Length: 177
Image (cartoon, rainbow, N blue to C red; front, side, top):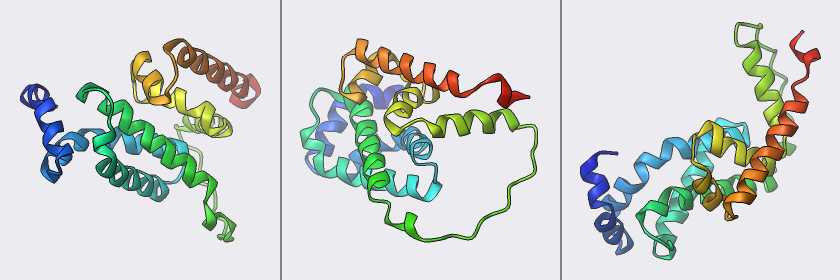
């Protein structure tokens, strides 16, 4: 985000809250990439992630007046909406009952270690995966992870630690060899 936009952020937020779509777009555009990455990891499906971010954007537009705090809390607020959309999508994934043809596995390549990590990450529950993705993948500071999860910073730190410990346990030496 440019320095000029950062300085004007409170005014842009005020205009967006009054219904100015261009101002809202200026605020949300830099958040769409982290939101999509969060949704993609949480859902494991690109199209479902796109849908979740789109729904979250619509909800953010409708609920912008309910944003508590200043423009600095916008990212945590928006990412928490995205996380909630991902939770709802996982609960109501009606299309998961449709039988899809099995896709042959891709040939192993030099990204084998990435797939081990991805498999272990997807074995975590969404509530365990979320703090790890926010902190390590999206590189959010601990206080922002806490605001996104709506918990205290010490609770966020504990959730990150417990999820990392569980992830480490899933990545055993046997999987590597």
